[in-house]
Image (cartoon, rainbow, N blue to C red):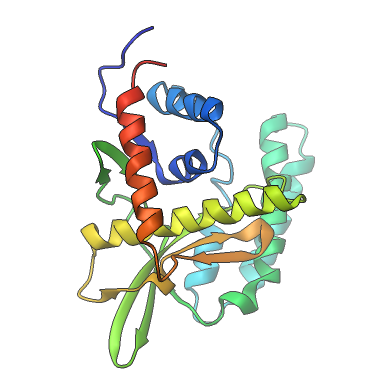
Length: 235
């Protein structure tokens, strides 16, 4: 066994997955975080800007989504593209269609752009990368509030009740991490609000907001990070 010289680190989405995984799967997640590949094709990289532009547009015009779908359709059929790029294009089309289907569900939220670089969150000695895709503004009883949204675009198996519960729990943990991120890295003078800290599961048309009573999930996350720090570099 070799020990990584780096400090323990993990992304918010991987930590959310870690929270709902078996002990064996958790070891794999830690190993991937400790030994990231030097070159990884980033899925949904090209569709993400379109999704964010649509959500931050006050008019929420569907025209850019339609134009983007046409571009991805052409890429999916282009023999000059790699199979990975073609498949990513097809998956991106599904993201765009799913986003249109849940537009009414998202209509009440005011989304705003975020900076590319955001401070990391440290939990129990583990550096957690919680980068908000969008800020979410709102108000309650005259108090200006803020939250953050994490976009999830993958199509996982959620057809069985247990798989659906797992996906829901991942969303709630991701939303909780966003709330923790805002508590330590609020970019404004607005008050962080759980209802505005969310994980948007586009392919499944669901929005998971940080629960009002969140103490248990925060405690579970801290315990998980202690475990990650203890195992870091040993797997």
